[in-house]
Length: 292
Image (cartoon, rainbow, N blue to C red; front, side):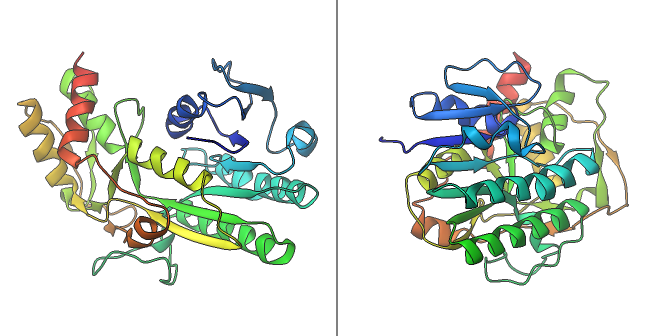
């Protein structure tokens, strides 16, 4: 597969490391690193999204920028800075350069509560979590720059991404607790919270497809499985696969959405998005990894 010139921002997280491993096959890939000593065969440089001067000269004309920065963390202040302030630095830099396109990694959390049907890209946004609100504001900022300055922006709203190399998230905690009995995950809404989960390799394949497809203007795609699972259903699957009883602490609290899930038909049609890994298979991969 021929790959256009790409600049990856955020190559040290779960999604970023997996994507970079794929991009390393192409000598046209550069990755910006911050403080982590990242081992990669791709070109790399030290930069900070909050310091425009640190990366401006590294942006090459006519390249695609993949922005993975600002994913969900426990530090809300850092999340705001990397999404909003960092986004402004990046977008203002792109105004001065002939950038082919920007791919912004967002989240289906922007939709907020949805118990009736899977969310479509045309649905109004009503996030209930701070993370969803931050991503909604970030998307609108990118939309403004796209319409005002003619930058091609593709927003990928990702579902819950899981896989063997993940180090956070509910599913990871559950699977790790099989071997480490000291890990007691908290299951909110008595395990009835529902989530749309997508295996990491399917998400990465879609990002690569997006890099190699040109979409003019501002475009949004849901990158999801299109199916929702309750926490109790997921726990039951893990118990069945691992043949182990999972210990969880149930809570009636509902700290965020009872249900988030998204319709992926637009991405299937226009991005050739084709999720291949079924939830049971993906969980099996995780269990095998953590068991060994």
